[in-house]
Image (tube, rainbow, N blue to C red; front, side, top):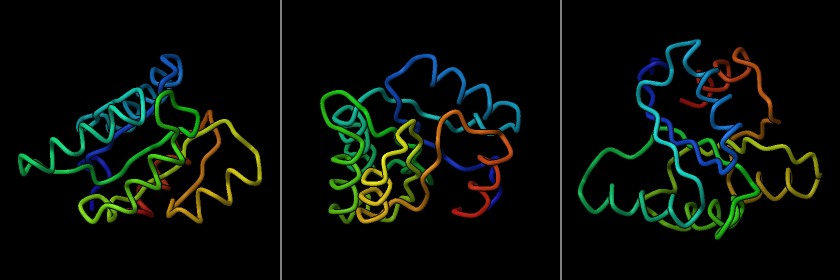
Length: 131
């Protein structure tokens, strides 16, 4: 799949991190199909609305661990338990270097774990690998 056509959902509550990630995606023309949400519950609700209306789901999710309302790990658990969303590749995009966060992310079904801030090259390589 052409990485530039990938539908990406960025789940991030820090406006500065959102801005940096969007800027990095724009550098490679990857921001055309980007949807941003700021917390876990909002994200799950948005995905349910897409599924209920038959709209296309994201091809990839970039998910922060430290989210308000429903943590990134809890959201990942819910996504992988729901047959409508379990196929969406989830990349943890976070500042946490805690071994238990990394292991838990993979145990719950994340396809990759990237530390913020990420480089554009790292992001493009990951997109090409998981899509």
